[in-house]
Length: 151
Image (tube, rainbow, N blue to C red; front, top):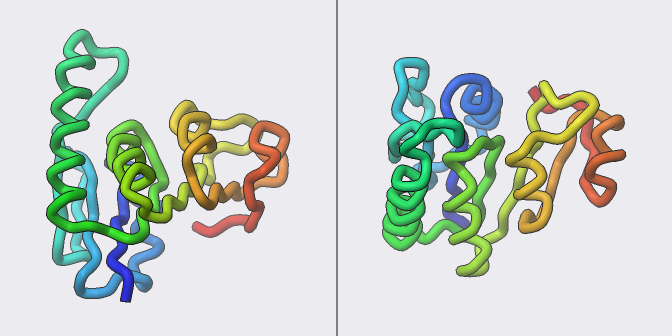
């Protein structure tokens, strides 16, 4: 069985990702950010990073810390597949995955009906499988796979 990393930021992204909990096996793990809104009771192995916001003045040092934290988690766990629903906290582990030949699957948020997210625009370039849930979003990501609503 291939080890899977399920990665999402807190809130709605994690809520969407938790809909995939039936796919989780005992060796899989979750990477998310620590917040008052994040409770991951559907996976035994969870890594929490600091919350990060690209608009805060400490963004650069927090991003650097997140990049190293993600590398440590990646080296420790060695996932073969990374499934992400976004947002920013998930980008570094997906880059590490791509660098070390893991399969990266990105699912654009159900909330993105007409336009892509900033994370989606980054992940579109590196994901092995890029999934959208609305046909309209194919105008932004024409090589994406449309599957309809997953969540």
